[in-house]
Length: 120
Image 1 (cartoon, rainbow, N blue to C red):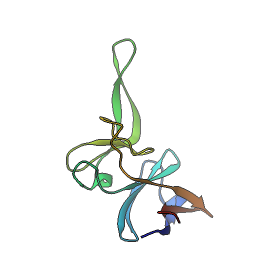
Image 2: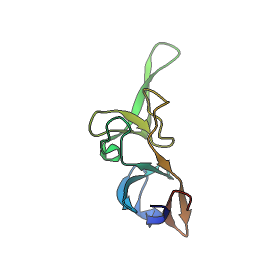
Image 3: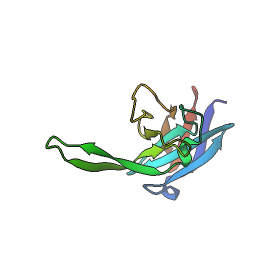
Image 4: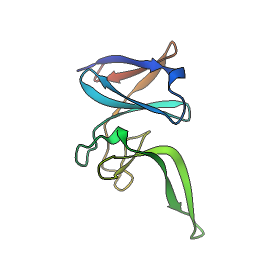
């Protein structure tokens, strides 16, 4: 189903939190990442698991001086079934950027979080 869906008041979804909602028959996770809102289809492209119900994490990355640094806290969602990790902002899989979770545009209108599905 296509359309524009009001999810909640922006103030009701604080940074670091998420809501998983049904939008026209489609399960969608809406995330507040450091004050910016993103929406992902709650279906992991790996095996169809509930992607948006998994833990919110960051990543450990190698540094130029052969150390490791943890960063991107709260910007990664890990699938609840098999642990595949995806960037919330882009939907890209961490392990293989060619694999993507479906994303949807999010707008703030009069203080409401609104998600667009399809061409709405």
